[in-house]
Each structure stands twice: as C-alpha cells, then as structure tokens.
Image (tube, rainbow, N blue to C red; front, side):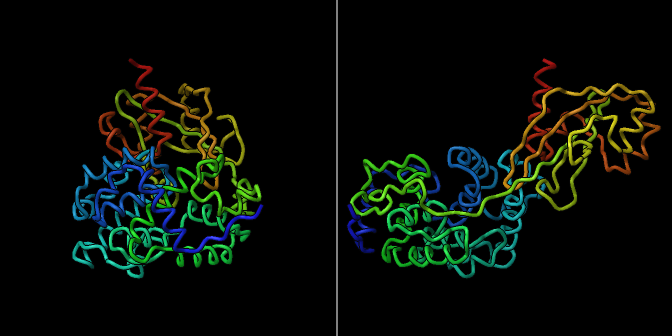
Length: 365
C-alpha cells in the first residue's frame, strides 16, 4: 500500500493539531524572552530535556538576565555548567552574552542572519530563537526534524552529507507555518521527541499514519539514512591526587580541549594501559624516589565523549610538609596549586573529578 500524498497545508494542520494535545509543559515555552529561549536551546544541544531541565532552572535562578550572565566570570559559569558536559557550550554561552551586552545593548538581535553571527549559535539555534521569540518564518532543523521529514516524505537522502542536509532543509523551510512559525517550530521538535522517536516510533497512534512513506514501506528503522559513523579513539588517563591533610593539589587546564579552564589532578596520559612503574613522569619519579605510598583505586572509570572514550584510573598519595617544601619547584612547574577542601568544591571540574571527590568524601563519613 502506498502512502497518501500530503501537502504543506495539511501537514501543518495535522502537526499543530497534534501539538495542541501533546505539547510538553516546559518553562521556556511559557516565555517569548529570547534570553531564556537561547539558554534552553544551548543547554539542550547534546542533552536530553530530562537532564537539561534542572540546569536550566538553576542557571535562570543564578543568572536571571543576560547582563548578569555577561558580568559573571568564566570560572563561575563553568562551575554552574558542571555535569552537563561539552563545556565549549558554556564558554560560548558566556562569550555570546558578553557580545550581546557590549554590541547590542543587551538586546538579542531579532533576526536569523544576525543571530547566526554570535558565538555558539549555529543554524538550528539561530532559527529556533528567531522563529520562537520573534516569529520569523525560518526552519529550525535538528535531528528530530530530519527524522520526521525523512520518514513521512520517504526521503532516502543521506543526512550525514551536506547535499542530504540541504535537501531536507529546503523541504523543512517550505513547510514552516507562515502565520505561526513559533508554534510550528516547537510542534515539530516535540513530535520528533515524543511520537516519531528514533527507535520504536508510535506509528499506531500517529496522525500522519496515512501519509507516512516509512510506515507504509516498513522503513522506519532505516530512515533517515545516515551512513557516516563516528570513530572513537581510546585515551588512557591516570590521575594522581596529591593531598596533604585537608589540602588537595589541583591544576587548571589552560590548553585548548574539552575541559579547558577547568580543574583536575595531575594527569599522566598514555596510548595504552600501563602500571605506574611503567610510566615516564617527573612527579611519579619524585614520589617513588621518596618511597611515598601511592594508593591506586581499583575501579577504572569509562567516560564516553562524542569522538573519544576516556579510560580513567585514580591514584592518591598523602605527602608530608617536608616533602612539599622540597617539591615546591616541581609542583609549581606542573602548575599544581594547593586548595583547601572547601575551596575545591567551588572550582569548575570535569564531572569525573567531581564524582571521584564525592565518592571519597562519602567513604570518609
């Protein structure tokens, strides 16, 4: 059986009718404030709503206006973001806020093209803000939209290619409701998230069932087509936690990378898993020369990132005051700074470091 053809007018009518019944009650839906809409969109990049919602509420409470966010320090913003991952989003968020305050008098640009020039705002985010906050007729196209349109219209275009993305984006643009682009953008996002899900879509109750090419050809599991696969590399981390009583030595990661400007312990990285004796590292050599016992925690932590897998082991060494006095030059050279336990809590840290510290704290109680 072939699917019944569907035109843009009917598509919008069915989608908005579905949305009127099934829309999610989310705090950023109750406002047209571009600041809060932008904040929600940045949080929801690479993050599911259920995970992102508490962060949104916390960030809005901590930074109620764009100006407050712009005048915060990067360290404060990173600490507030801690646990969400993809920390470049937080750095870009902060930089974007400063730009809007400095160049646009604290008012978000009200059109897609100008929004696109701001740090951290790509085509999807710019379109989402422009359509929802300012009712600009522009298509916000994300993974949900690719999936919904590919299935309903039976599109075999590869969305991992520029050509495939361009074709579906053109279709998405033609489908945007010219009167209610704000509701349309939110409706198609929710439809992809709740009804036309990546796996086990709810086809039996779908308003597009008669018109869906994927349903009638049983291709829900292969549409949208995406041939390019992410190849992850493995990295082996050994963290050495140097402690002296209630003081912990930590290092600010200043080089570019996933955890830039966040704090962690002394890190030894290798291309494979090695024992401490096999590693070439100045601090380890110094600790071993003075026969200081290093406690190795048996659990290996696996931390998954988009393009890499981190395999992490933690080690701890308690050092004496005489050792610290003797090793000052070495610790300084490695950029390790002493922090009281209370001060460590306020530092922005990778979530793997935060979880390790919390676990050690619970074990002491």
